[in-house]
Image (tube, rainbow, N blue to C red; front, top):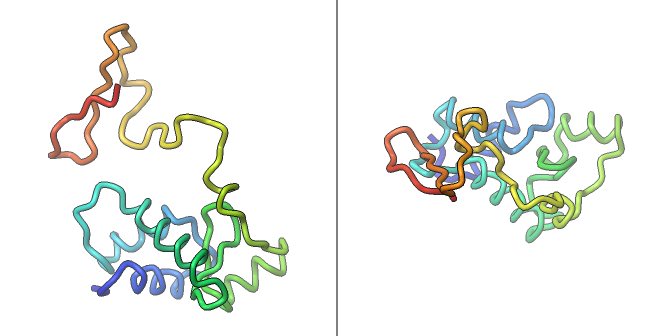
Amino acid sequence: MEKSWKEAITRVLKEADAPLHYTEISEQILARGYYSTDGATPAATVNAQLSSSVKHDGEKSPFIRVGKGIFSLRGSAAQTTVTSKQKAQPVAESEEESSGSIIHSFGMYWQRDLVVWRNDLKIFGKQQALSKPVDFG
């Protein structure tokens, strides 16, 4: 098991043959046992680690953003493949976060088809299987 998220992210990206979306990176980290967490949103943590490194470390960052939410290791074969195919350019931080919608995590913790739409304004959901239900309304 890796000592930090950054080490686990680096390991997954080294093993990948193509750039990965941060949600795929987080899923692979947890599935392969590279890092263990009780947090409710490991994908958000991975995205924060990657975005922070790219933004604050600049050219010294081991990571490079090659698309919206998609990252690769700087100088890796995966980055070279993407760069030659589609001229990967850095994505502005505001471009990645702005979607023009109030709801950014639609369906992250609940399924739309299971919601009973009524006028009582209660939308209960759970972040994890054994957690206490929370009213998202």
